[in-house]
Amino acid sequence: SYELTQPPSVSVSPGQTASITCSGDKLGDKYACWYQQKPGQSPVLLIYQNSRRPSGIPERFSGSNSGNTATLTISGTQAMDEADYYCQVWDINTYVFGTGTKVTVL
Amino acid sequence: QLQLQESGPGLVKPSETLSLTCSVSGGSINNYYWGWIRQPPGKGLEWIGSIYYSGTTYSNPSLKSRLTISVDTSKNEFSLKVSSVTATDTAIYYCARHLGRLSSGLDYWGQGTLVTVSS
Image (cartoon, rainbow over all chains, first blue to last red; front, side):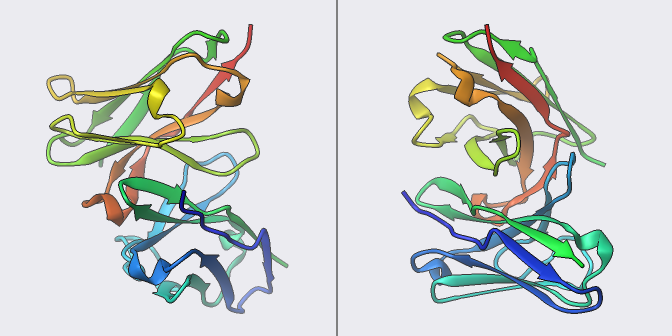
């Protein structure tokens, strides 16, 4: 089965840029999505089709996908961005979520 | 504004069947894919399965033998059944809408409902 690997944690200072990676075999050949989940809340779709933002998602969230790695970038990180982040792909009729990354804003 | 609401028993006994329904309001269930996702306490997200409004289903291979996903367009709702549950099925269960194609992600989510498997 297909697997997506993320770093367990990422720390970032307010106002700086955070990059969260998602690794999988030939991931660049697929469409990657990214979700944000805050404690006690449902996930929120941040990025779909590698780099597209749904309406209402701030421009500081951006995505890219190439080779074996998809990346979510948070520019000008704010305290409110402290959350868990998950990547996700659709692969051979199966949805796969990444292992998740906890972003801490120090 | 589209809203999704999960409903069903919060406690299920081992070996029995877990049954949940997702009611969709503020929009039609037609022409979209709809999904079920779960999250064990303190752990990551796991896709359970998805269904098109016409009834076509896709299931997580690890759960497929125990899953039934159905849709009722007249009631604007879809449902999940997981048979022969064990403690490992204890999780928050979410229903969600696929943005468009199945590859485009899930853009509307329910608030989630905790289902505990215990005798």
